[in-house]
Length: 159
Image 1: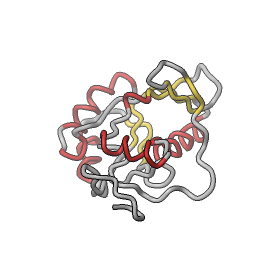
Image 2: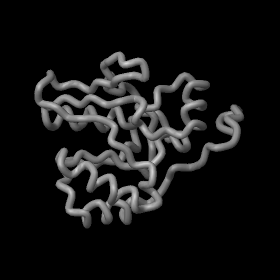
Image 3: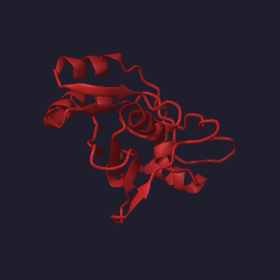
Image 4: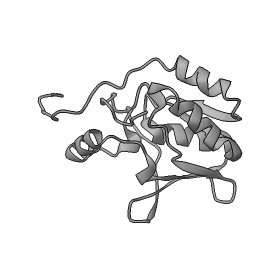
């Protein structure tokens, strides 16, 4: 139950210590270019931070976001867009393309990273922006979060 709304079974807290997971990633020797937690503003805020710092463009695939069915259902019920939901105990990582499989294997070898996924690509070919391809193949701009970030909602983005 959240604010008087029963969201049913399947939602749980996503707060987790990330140091062991990140240590495993570092030990894999994958070439890490960027690493952030999406605690405030969600994945959308983290990706906008990346674009702002690098001048590159990011395109993500909505279907690739590791969102539990319960969290997806709760998001739809509450009218929330999952990329904007704060997720504690999660990490957004940018690695050199040849290291993607190595990084995923390292993350997936830890219980907190079992659902780690390749969600998109970074490019210098487009204007700096965050784009998302939806489940129907349409590309849309992911706006930068504005105002006060949403508080954490349990299991927004799974590990």
